[in-house]
Each structure stands twice: as structure tokens, then as C-alpha cells.
Amino acid sequence: MERWREIFETEIEEYTDDRWYLHFDDNIKPKKPDHGREKYITKTFGWFTCRKCKRQWPSNYVTVVFHFRLNKKDQGHVKVRRLKQNCKYCKNAPMEKPRIDTEHIEILMENLVKKIREKCYQENVPKSDKRHLVKSESPHEPDHCEGCKAGISPCSAASVNCSEPTQQALLTALDGVFELSSVRPVNSLRTPTNVSMHFTMYGILGVDEKAQLLMTYLWLTFWWDNEFVSWDPDECGTSIIALPRKKFWVPDIVINEFMDENKAPFVPYVYLFNDGQINDALPVKVVSSCNLDIYTFPFDIQNCTLTFNSYLHRVKDIRMVLGKSVEEITQMSKEVMTTMGEWELIDITFHDSSTHDENSIDELAFHVRVRRRATLYVVNLIIPSCFLITVDLFSFLLPPQSVDRSSFKMTLILGYTVFLLIMNDLLPITGNTIPLINVFFSLCLALMVASLLETILITDLLHSSTRLSPVPRWVVSCAANVWLPCLPAVEAKEIKQYRCSSNFKGV
View 1 (cartoon, rainbow, N blue to C red):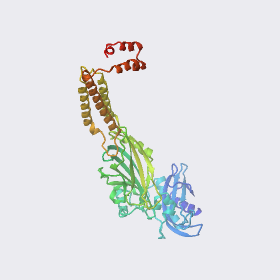
View 2: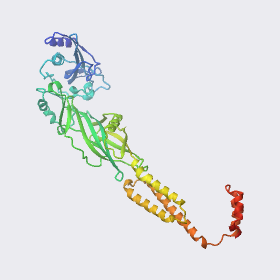
View 3: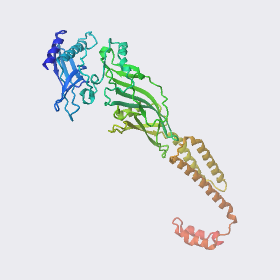
View 4: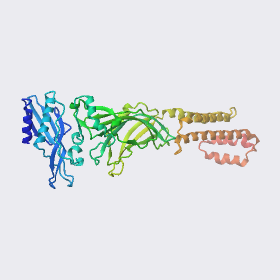
């Protein structure tokens, strides 16, 4: 520790009279400095020693984190954290701190002072850092490195040096990265690429019940790390740049339920950030298969699945990570959705189907629930059917002697048949199940036909009564003396009048 302080004080005293202090702090978060502090993350060469097996190994990827600030009282403060590594041969090996020799500490302090002069004193200093000396060709072990597990770019990415803070200089420095576009951007093939994704549903274009398809329009967003590149945003003049998609490796993420080609516009660019992260965003017109249940049409709710996964790579190569919560995805989709037609988005849920089998393919499964807007079908189908069946029932109030009720009912049946033919395009067509509304229409038609048959029977009885023989006397006697007294609504006076009636006497 004293050696670090002495070298740092020697370097800083050449440029300022302010008092600066340096100390180690293993609790600082590399990517999240305290309010008012600047960060500087770099890598150097060092040695590690395992406390269990006493094995020693060199590393060119010793990550060192500096957080610094200058107080108003002309006092500066620097916090230092050296990220650890552990032995790859020992089980449950503890993390070990690196040993860095004086030569590399001097290089670190020289670069740190440059950052302090630039950030705290706004001096115009050369943008290029003096790099550490490479003394070992031993391969880096990302699985045993604290920096790689934390996703810190100097540990996992190759730094790019810009000759000047311009876009042209950055593009020139990235030429070597562009040549590696055909391989997965990891330093070790045992390191999986974590692909973070989320989507926003911009529109529900429709549902094809006959073909069992759901048509939607999505905005897809993907994030992943490119371990082949990182740069200093101050040195290169920017922290983000848009570059052609073809210059980078892009994960082969597909939607399993996709049933047609994507007809959305092609987006030729991706965003590259200075820490090696790549952001890919593109629109997709999704025509996906969906097992539709239309039994309760038009009050049906459909649940369709969208499964995102790599088409080729296994879990050991690509791991799918949910970038946003499903609540945020649902809320954002409802806010931006403009085209829904007859369908309304209820919610989007997520099913975690991750697996630990390295030979399987990792996937993210989303369940999209949509509800049909039933107003159109209620107004155009159900209410007119109820009106027609009501008119048919009230037709029994017409006097059969003066009105031909059978012609009226036949006209109703003909009109209802024409109505069903006209409205046939609004009904779903599928072979899986018969919608309940079809049963309703068939029942209404059956009631109209039964009403017509009843009218025919009554009319026949009225017109053929004159040709029938008189009622036998014993039937009339039973009706007057046995059946009528059993009816509670018939009074004794009415029974007596019936017995004395002319019909009774004439039998």
C-alpha cells in the first residue's frame, strides 16, 4: 500500500499543489461510483497465489478500478480496488488479490494522473494511455475472474486506442474488430453469451380462425456483450456509435411459432457502446401459430405463445435473459398500441423455461392474452336474432280466422335464413369445435320451424272440425263431472253453466 501511495504522490506533485490521498477500498462498486466521483477502469499484469494449493499463475487481465474526486478544499481523494481471481484447479477456491510489481504500478499511476488532470482540472492531455507490459501468454480464465463475472470491459474486452477523439479515428481503430464478425465475441469458448431481450407489442393486426394464426407487430430489442472491443469515451470522443449490422456477430434469435416471412422494414444498423455492449432493435411483423378456442365466440379470450430462442446455439453458447419485467412490457405495449381492430390486449405473461442441460437450447416463452371486442357481433348478430324470434312468438296473438299466420311465419323463416347468409362472413370458420353462437342460431331457426308446424296443425284442426263426428256422450260427461271440478280455477257456477249448455244437452 505504501508503495502505491509513494508512486502516486510523486506523479501527482508534478502537476498540482493540491493534496491528494490514495487508499484501497474493496467495497466500491466498479461501475457505480459515489456521487461526485469519476471512475477509471483499466487492466495490468500481475501474479496470483492460491492459498489452498500454493499454485501461482500470471495474468494480463488484472483489473484495477479507480474512483476519484477533488474536494472544494483543494484536497483530492482516490479509492482503489484490485479485482480478484481464484484457482481453477481447487474446488471452492477463495478469491485471491493480485501482486503487481513496481513497474506496472508506475504505469497505472501515470495513466491515473492523466485522468485526474483531465477530469478534475480540465487540462488538455494526450488521449492515449501507456499500456501495461505483457509478460505472459497464459490464457485468461473468465470463469475464475471477478472482473469477468461482473461484466467489466477492461477485463473481458480488448481496448481500442484512438489517435484522436473523432469518429474517423474510432472507425479506423475498430477495423480489427470488424474482421471477427463471423465468430461469437468471447475470449473463451466456455463463456456463454448472455442475450438480454424484451419486446413491445405495437399492434394486433388480426386473428385467422380458419388457419389458426395470430398476426401482431412487435418492436424487438436485444442486448449482448462483445468482448473483443472497448474504448475510452474521452479518448475516442464518444461512448456510442451506430454501425452496420453486417460488421458484427448477431445472435440467431427466432420465434418458434413463426409461420410466414417477416415483412417489416429491415434495420441495417446496431448501436455499439464503449464498454462492448451491442444494442440491436428491429421491427417484426409476426404471423404465429396459435391454438384458438372459439367455443365462446364472440366473447372468447385467446392465449397465444411467442417463444424466443437461438435456432442453433446451445445453452453453453447463448443464454436468454429477460431484459424487462412482463409488467413493464404489458404496460408499454398498452401505451403505444395503435392498431388493435376487434382485439384488445389483456396482458403478457412469462414462463421461465430455463434449463441446466448444456445440450439444450435456452428459450424465453411469453403468453399473450387477447380478448375479442364483442360489440359488433352483439349488435349485428345476437340482437337481430332475438328480435326475429320474439316477433315469431308474438305471431300467435294473430286471429287464425282472419289472418294467414302460416304465410307470416314462412316469411319470417325466409328472412332469418337470408339474415344468416348475409352475416355468415362474421362467423368464425374452424374444424376444431362448433361455436356456441352457431348452436344459438340453429336453435332459433328450429323454434321458428316448430312454430310454423304448430300453426299448420292448428289451422288444419279449425278447418276440418265440421267434417268430424260429434263428441261421444261419455267423454262430455267425464269432462263435466270429473275433470272440470278438479281444476282449481274453474268455479262451480261455470261448471253448472257448462252442464246446462246446448252442447251438453245435445249429446
